[in-house]
Length: 245
Image (tube, rainbow, N blue to C red):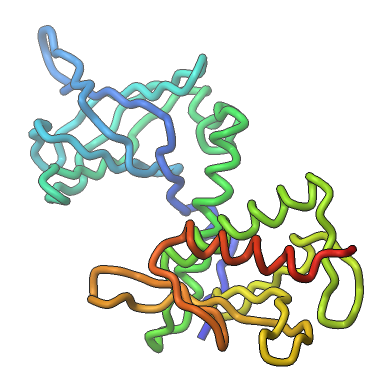
């Protein structure tokens, strides 16, 4: 089943931290030193999560915070709402009590550079696909998406450099226009059948490697590759075999 995202849930969506830096200090009387060895995990209109190897806070403790991204800064105060441990780091969640006028820029993307905006789009797409995937064990993970991204970038660049190919219906097209991403996040593209010489659509799937800690790439009726570079080499040769004379 797929989930429908309401307007309310979109407002509460937690954005990835990207290259935004954060510093925090305890509130109270006297001088309080800023903690700067923090990694911003995610951010929403209501709060944020941070990782730190040294941060120590109690629940409901109040803090001041400051966010920085490029030339943009924002500050405010928050309260500790939870604490936990993640991969040898302490992770804390903070509920915002007050934020300044500049904070909105961090939520709308106005404070992000072009490269950060691109990565934000990728991160949100990955979050969305993870939320809507079927709960039946179908194989979808970030490695699969990286395979699709790598093949798409390869096909795009080949077309930019003047390569055109012939599709399975005899049409002439750029390599990138021949790619189709399936519902299970697999990828298909035209290839020449070594047995018949016909141009057919072949599927590339991410599969389990020789052990549970590795992955491999398998082409329909063809070879299996243990790394992405060998797969990309095979695709280049495949496009060359069906290139326009």
